[in-house]
Image (cartoon, rainbow, N blue to C red; front, side, top):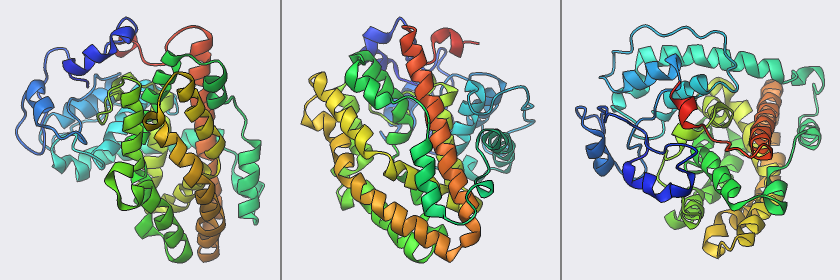
Length: 380
């Protein structure tokens, strides 16, 4: 999904993976117009929109990518979903990711956003995704039936797994730091957007608290201070492509699953409490890691502008953590106590997927290989 001009910026990584998203210039609709060539798409699309669809990783993602190149209403028969791990399979994760992306940015004809065929297929993917989440996440109701805030604190304290931020600060390489930012770009370049879907689904104190957090995520009304923009500056400082969607093609399923989780919670009112639990975990666990990432960038000579994304989070998230815990979570549970289990499920799910994500990166690096999807893996 990268243009050839962006490929030239990554010569050091070219032997590990291709950054060219198409081979034969497929036709890709842009802004609801008739299909046009990839080169025309690249020049016509806004920087916040997708320019080129990625390679498929298998039959599930191929079905979505093929459909998105046709007019809405032509999805056709869906391939079966079986024999895969919905939390890590590259093909499954990319298919679900693209189903969600039509709600965020211009990927294709806007009519696909509410296309019944695509939504039906997405629902099948979501059922498989939720089943696997429930396989891995202990039902919070069996352990914490009443004290939601203390249960949330305990989930965070008990979260296992290695520390990516500590590794990158103490022994990580510059190439590993760049890879880490490629992975995180799938979420950080749209930071705050998924959680914002939850605002109209909340009431009272929980809604007011989420709005306060989200307002600062969007730079308190200053576009250049929006956290998504600041992450783009970090990518620029590292010599990466900061255009939206620029690295989705090379991201493994364990990475896309972390973004699919928040998108699923965000786009279903039924999961509004899980979305609150997800956001609370984000805010309550970020201060120390963000400080380490900033220090890791400084270790490689990245200046204040390139570190600003992380430095802002160190300052803001300490306050956001208190707002999320004591007002957003507490406010939701006071208003809708029956949603306690969903809230804790959302918190536990994000902690579990983040642990799997960190383990994937650290295992790859320990074996002296890239944590990204290789050309051979994408060609399967």
